[in-house]
Image (cartoon, rainbow, N blue to C red; front, side):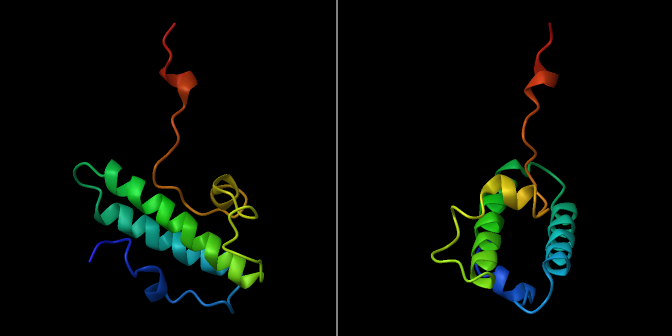
Length: 101
């Protein structure tokens, strides 16, 4: 079983808890997972996990707020990892830092 299959339902995230408590539990789980698998090359795993987590959070929030559909318009990637505070494993590149003039 890969990490991205069937993990979200087993996290025990209920629709009854407040969003900050659900987010904090999710972020702790992601931090623990990241630390556990921190040896070796992990970029491909992180690139697989980030979209899965974002989509799961999007569905969770859409269901909680009774939004129609899966909530793709209402909850964008940047909102999930910015406004809603979900940890992003793959950090975006800072292009200014990489340019040596």
